[in-house]
Amino acid sequence: MQIKERFLRYIQVETTSDESSESCPSTPGQWNLARLLVQEMKDMGIADARVDENGYVYGTIPAKGKHPERTGLIAHMDTSDAVLGPTHPVVLPHFDGKPVTLANGLVIDDADILASHAGEDLIVTDGTSVLGADDKAGVSEIMELAALLTAPDAPEHATVCIGFTPDEEIGRGADRFNVEGFHADYAYTVDGGAVGEIEYENFNAASCHVTVHGLSFHPGSAKNRMVNAARIATEFVHMLPESETPERTEGYEGFYHLISLEGDCEKAELTFIIRDHDREKFESRKARMQAITDYLNTVYGAGTVECALRDSYYNMREKVEPRMEIVEAAREAFRACGVTPVSVPIRGGTDGARLSYMGLVCPNLSTGGYNFHSRKEFITVQSLEKMTEVLLTLVRR
Image 1 (cartoon, rainbow, N blue to C red):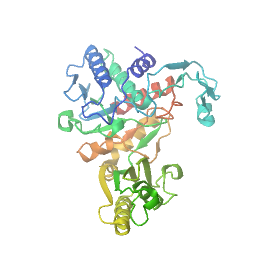
Image 2 (cartoon, helix red, strand yellow; image 1 turned 135 degrees about the vertical axis):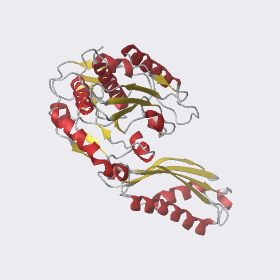
Image 3 (cartoon, rainbow, N blue to C red; image 1 turned 120 degrees about the vertical axis):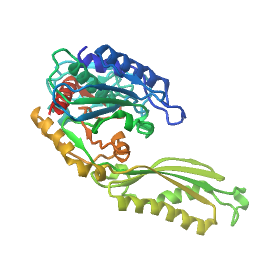
Image 4 (tube, one colour; image 1 turned 180 degrees about the vertical axis):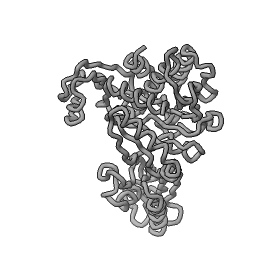
């Protein structure tokens, strides 16, 4: 099986995760992909390939030759719920590098990026769903590497510990990962974007749920009596800086992101996520949410506004910096494959951020995909092949 067929096979297994589910994995489709991957690994001869009771897939390829290190490679099986529905991939061989009109009329117009991939074989959707390259591209590249390393003519290489996680898109991918049983000295998540990216900085992240309690009266007799929860909720939002939202920030700039706002006069609820690369600024952002809560309670009465903050993950840089030789090894692997490595801060998080704080240092590598969580998502076959080559070079170093 070539990596193109492997990728197309995986993306058509429906694995959207579901934040409202209490099970692990959160959706049954992830079990289907997990079992498929385990069977494929067993067919390759990976004796310990297995899926545990929580849907995590593990397998180990023993070293060939004198390679003492144990390198972990990790990707997640679930896909974003940004656009629901089955994936209908479309392959455009020898793509001309120009904007692409999908079957439903949606246009992929990332001109510079598309032009840089002219002549390659482009994989898109029909425009009705995400492609699922996040992160089935990473899954495919690791599985293709596994096929190469278990072939009779495999080159010498380090021990490779493989892990595929469920529910990364809903922030649970590392929750039940068996770090001790994984037996890797360090690892890489393969969950990034353009080929060449190496990421070891990510946001510090928290969620914030705000509840506003109101008191309804007939508007004709409401003076000094009504407490309008919906209006107070909008007041809360307007007390946050308008310039510090996702649509107005980039790079290392943090933000407050209003995910949802719903309610009426009696009760309103707001959900935010809070992000910042700098830990001190991150803590200040959380303190600001509490300060707004306290202020509104002085205006409208104690208990009117409740604020529940919960940390999600932290910047992995603190854990990776003492092991920068791992990052440099990845850079060397990219260079050896003719790719210029680029280190950029992740404006999000990966399983690797959590795993780094669980004792498994785990920077993030590219997959070759673009426009994740979008109907305009795309990747080329050649990017999948190049990343497989990079991973092979990395475990042979």
